[in-house]
Image 1: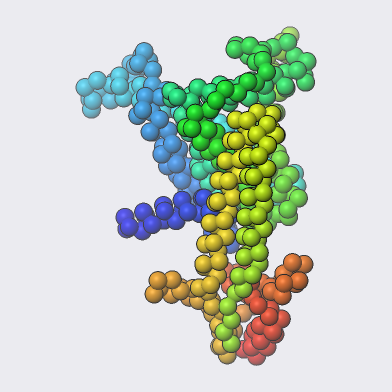
Image 2: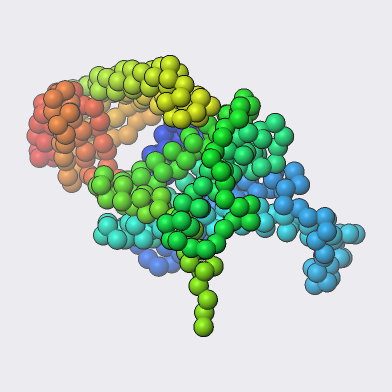
Length: 265
Length: 148
């Protein structure tokens, strides 16, 4: 049983790198024949997602990322676990850290699912929400997690300052491009970036940037394969569905800017 | 009748990919400020190289797998056999269970003389890819499934 599990994990890794079309493909010909079956399959996909989320967030949490030593323990939690652990504070901090490390990638997953499925529905090729869920769960579990891991590494490690500043400057430039397009009077706390000047990337920093770009390519490519295989879409429709996801950060930032500048009477 | 899938299209794709990747890599390395900054151009060249290596390995795996596949058409069934390290994986459809059969050839496949034959599509059937002399094979399958 353990050997078969290790074998299937290895096979999954090989598929994720060398055969992304197989990695995201639904393995059954029909995804569900009844509401109960659909709910069961949705639950299965949720378990897969949560398992991969734990695999991503747990190492970060155990490394101390997102764990705040000053976090106060709520009385209710202390009462609940007090009988099992002598000091609930470290456990509470770990749970809060785990929640924080999971939050951003979960939000990104939900945004991907919503924009992807809307894109699929708008092209009138949808074979069902489950097919989109299947595509997005596998795509985000592998490739989005790799992107987030790369960004975390740049944020929390020494020796990659040039790469870190480059990524931050790119993000700030992107946000300000939208702010300027909307003509809004808002800004980031760090202020408007100047011209992006690239100092020498360290070898590690350069390879992390390569990982980020390659993971982003795989992320969009696997969404495309998901649209072609799981929704049986044509090439141009699949590209449109992926474009919806590609444009989602722009919509998110634009929405945030509009919200920040709109005063409700 | 026993036939083996052709590796020609995959081989051609591999060669084209390697040529394009090497060309892009050389262009980026010999023009360090092509993308505005030497660091960015160098990093982009690395990205191209990594994606190129991954794609080449993927095509190499595909060629390796195709070389080990055999399609057998007997009077009772169509069989797809894959052998690797003394282990054989076999999948077949008896002709009396064939409900549909389809030969597809896109423009490139037609030009290169191969095609894909699908049996019982949508019913967990069998797909024979990169079939050489596809019309001959398809005629044999059609005749035998009509007889069954």
